[in-house]
Length: 200
Image (cartoon, rainbow, N blue to C red; front, side, top):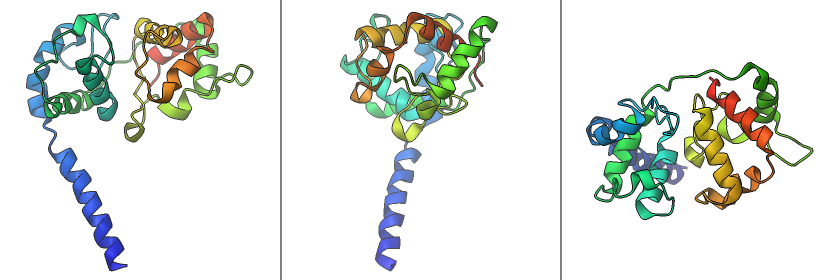
């Protein structure tokens, strides 16, 4: 019993130490270049660029690392992350994770279908509920690197779902999002993206 408690304590201490290394204050300084597209606190004013505020730390760190390595291609960010260490990227992720996302509005005529897809999926076509991975309020799950979706721009979400559907974006774990997106119709993508924009 004592040995088990000691192992658990050491494991938890290691996790705490890893998190303690993240410096959100330094992340804020490092994120100055991000502000031009994503807004000072991660709430972009342009739907072409995603909101980063309130995003799950581990998901955002994965995206930054994938962009840096070229695994995820975003031409607008080419070379911007080249000289950052993984710890610096983690600090940036820590800063944005602490910010509060602004919530938009869903189109009234898309709410019913969008909510049904988000909460229940489409059993007829084998589409799982978005909420099963991203949470009922779209907050995501850090431990599984599932992103927060709440308040994200409709246009950005649509673009990413279409990219997953076509295979243009392929940095999802186990091709999970690619598999789901291929089953979504264009109308379903429009509806769920609109619903997510107003989700909170």
